[in-house]
Image 1 (tube, rainbow, N blue to C red):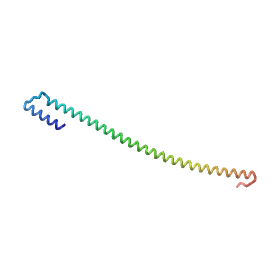
Image 2 (cartoon, rainbow, N blue to C red):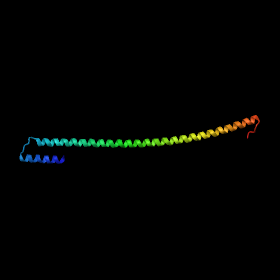
Image 3 (cartoon, one colour):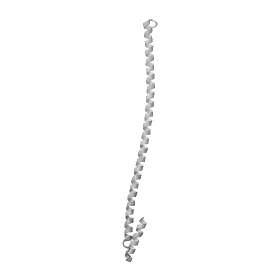
Image 4 (cartoon, rainbow, N blue to C red):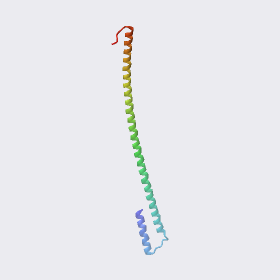
Length: 118
């Protein structure tokens, strides 16, 4: 388009030097091309903005996906810790119950005279 504008401007200069009157058609064509060039620049600017927005959205989506993966990993670790803690508490409860049963049986035996506390 720049080459076309340069060519038309050169032709307009030549026409003026030679006194050729095309009724302003050449000047109109130059104006139209310049307007088209401006619009093309605006479109290219909008396209650049759109591409930048697309990239930002893709980066944001990728970041969110990474964050979600990290949250899932943390949740898995928390679940593992909870299960291990439950197992540990269950083992402690079993030991407490076994001790309680043993003391209860020892007291019963002592009360009934079948054994000694010890």
